[in-house]
Length: 115
Image 1 (cartoon, helix red, strand yellow):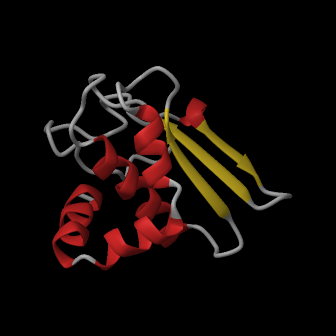
Image 2: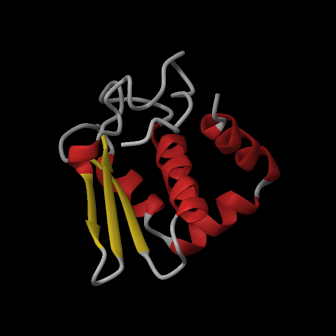
């Protein structure tokens, strides 16, 4: 996986370096235009898990052709509130509203800065 995700908001390392996102948990079905990413927060009560998920969604939106339907989820058993986070991350209206919030978009963009 290309090392482009910048920082976990709570750690000075990239998401790849922290094993939050790794190639084994990225599933691509090019024929059916589907991409699914599972990520593992650094701790099971990570307060930045939703922000990390939103950052992954925005990165995918910016990098992939529009034909792809993307799904981003917390890896099974890796967060205390994984169901709630997954529900938020896969609610198109909530994601759109989050991306339209200038403060939240600024935080997302800080997570995606490439060195």
